[in-house]
Image 1: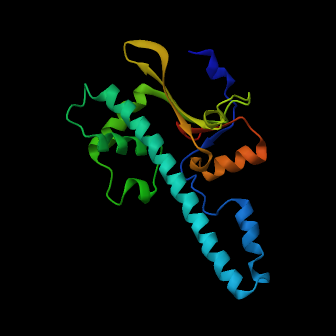
Image 2: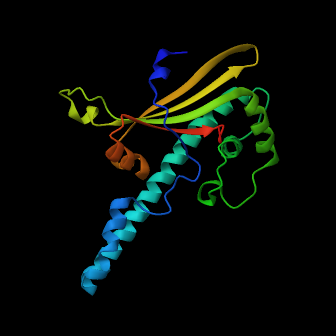
Image 3: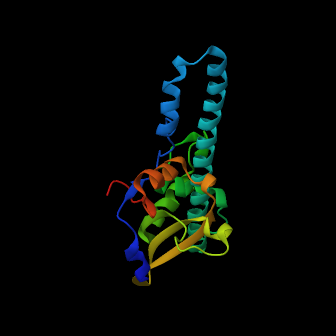
Length: 206
């Protein structure tokens, strides 16, 4: 495995259910002062407040779905030989099972298919762990500040092939604008001054 893996901070968090039930602390503090404001200002502030909550939740949902798509694509590439004619949506459902995702905004209202359940069982023999890392841009200044200002989302899947017990890694690196980062990731970057925030999607509870 690449030595770069050893640089990851041991700050794994559970991604399932990470969409905040409440917005970031700064917004909560603003809301606490509403009672001291005139009614007209209060109405405008409430409108802005609700917009910020909705925006944060939409970004978090979008981030989770993008990561789940990366995992589903990996599963499709690795399992399609044994499971022919299985649609991508089924691999996406398999991903929801592996990552213990239960949000109806992502998985829908219908029960997950039996084929997805079977694929999840097979995937557990293949996958060792799945992690997502959010990394700050390089701190070394460059002439191209636009590129340097982008953060990185790194999806990592460690797995083993049946004919080769040596662990392998499937990685997807994607540049992210600050406004497109999940709300709790932005808050952690600001509060903890960390260079990297990591989430473990599978297995959970370890």
